[in-house]
Length: 249
Image (cartoon, rainbow, N blue to C red; front, side):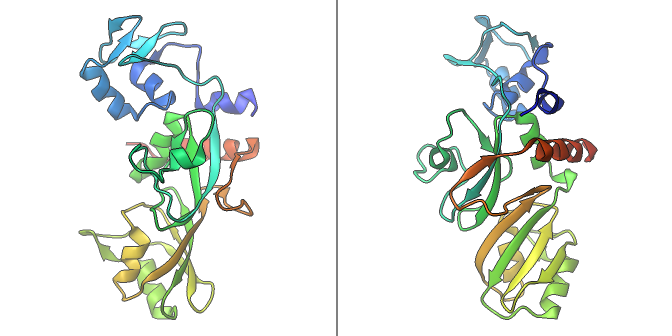
């Protein structure tokens, strides 16, 4: 990965806020980092950390007794998650994605894919990427291929595209197109819990297979199930532009 592209995401030489440091180290989100700091569980050079403080290269940061450091190299992976693998870091879940991937450095998921679904999952050690991709207001596109138990009709596609009442809200309008008699493509810009399954259930359809094929500019392509690859420099460059162009709260 080129230094130029990596530095678009992360700067390591300047003082950085402690919550950002913890996020970029892959410990947790910035919000969770603030809670850890506030609870007195974080130290810098042996002293209890304060909210809003900055750290500089060479300082020793600990969460509890564990020394935390940002990785020298940013990692962003495209993973083809199989059905049955759970997007969680809970160690008691034997099929969690972290154990399944078994990557040599700590990475975590940028947006979940439910247990019964398969396909493209992005994983990284960069907290900023995770925060930006998971912010609902940013409306990042995610594309799926869906197989259902009944014939896909024009009426069904029309209603799905217009928005569906689920979970005490109405889903955002989306793009939907027929692929085959029982399959269709859908492009969402939000990530409600089991959204596609709930949308289909609202019209009496049951999802038999759900495959995510794209997240923003990253495509699943021919990546074998259960395998992963690093993003190319071109993909990272495009991703950086898309993340910078999205609105922030």
